[in-house]
Each structure stands twice: as structure tokens, then as C-alpha cells.
Amino acid sequence: MKRQLFWFGVVGVSAMLLHFALVTLVLVPLGAPPLAANVLGFLGAFQLSYWGHRRFTFEARHVPHRQALPRFFGVACLSFCVNEAMYFALLRFTALDYRVSLAIVLFAVAALTFLLGKLWAFASLPQTN
Image (cartoon, rainbow, N blue to C red; front, side, top):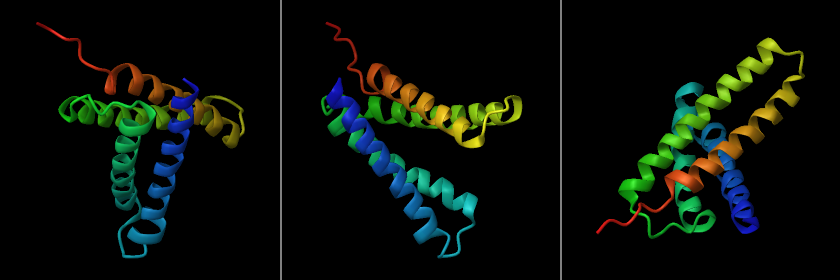
């Protein structure tokens, strides 16, 4: 479990840095609108995240891509939506500082992403005879 958490952090931070770099250093300077660039940055970071978690975090090379890829894409999209909804709710309905709210959201969403990745997206299908 420690190994998985280590690699989850390494892959996650790497994907975040790639997302940031794509948006701020490549796409927006080339003329892409920031919101469109953010979607493209997400899609680029998703690739790094999928392959990194498949190879290193969950060691799931035996799980077929046709199963793991759409599942993990669903997890990533769900995580983004939960992130936005939780952050909005904490900012709107609590007196918490925005940084505290963001920290709570990031840790909660990371835990959700890890659990869904481990238990569903990269989990092996049961064998049927």
C-alpha cells in the first residue's frame, strides 16, 4: 500500500505539472482560449495519469485497455466534477479560507480517485468459465 500511495503521488503531481505546462506555456501562448486550453491540458494530463497509474501505481498491465481506459476516464471526470462541487460548496456555505477549502477538496478527491482507481478502474474482471 505504501508503494501504491508513493506512485499515486508521483504520477498525480506529474500529471498536474503537465496540465499546468500545457495550458500556460503552450496552448494559451499559441492563442487558445484559457477554458479550451484547460480542457486540452486535462486530456494531455489524463494520458500521463492513465499510463502512470496503470504501470506504476496499480501495476495493472494485465487489465485490458478496453476495460481500464474508459473506467479511469470516468473516474477522472467524476473527480473533476466532485472537486468543483465540493470547492463551490465550501466557499459558498462555510467561513473557511479558500486555501483551507482547497486543501480539504484536494485531499478528499485524491482519496476518491485512488479508491476508485484501485477498486474499480484498474481492478481485474472476475474470471468466468
